[in-house]
Image (cartoon, rainbow, N blue to C red; front, side, top):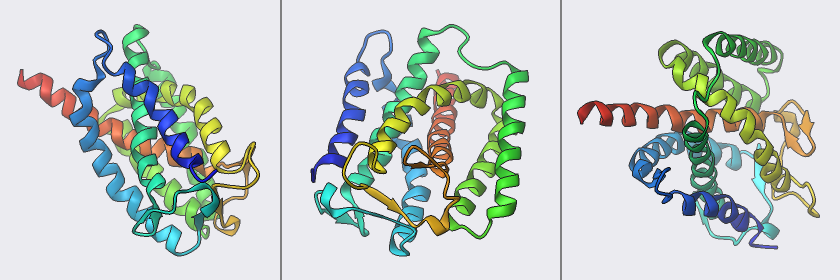
Length: 231
């Protein structure tokens, strides 16, 4: 079982990677913008991950990882920040291509934005002393606010994609947090989160995924639009 986390990364990445060369999708042409978006996302999320791991806010079960580490993070955790965003962003562009007018209306986007921000802010008001909740929700609040005000069209397309992606997300993260296996691959100090779980997945993880993916997407959107204008 020492390759479980590695196999989850590889399984998530492999099919989207192969279909990236589909003549109609041609996602491989967006690799450069994806790499840049992922770099900026990792600059923040890896730093956050290292600090939290070193302070015991979360950690990794040696029984499910190969043991190779960089900055005290398993190599599998580094790959997570490449493989999972790749699969999700590929799915986003595929849905946008396959389904005409993919995305929410301006009104629906505004309703979702206000509802989500209200939930995050109210929850944070009562749970500001929990480090995972504090950093995670604060980042999401700031990111959502900036994108809603400056790039609302990105949010309108991303939100329905995120709802679709929640299903595979809970499968992968469920396994990582102990669903269907003997122990957890990733463990959490529950005094630093809300203690609310969907199956075995801390509810904060869904907001973590939202922030991670939206960061990559908005940077990619900026680069791709700039590229089109230059033509």
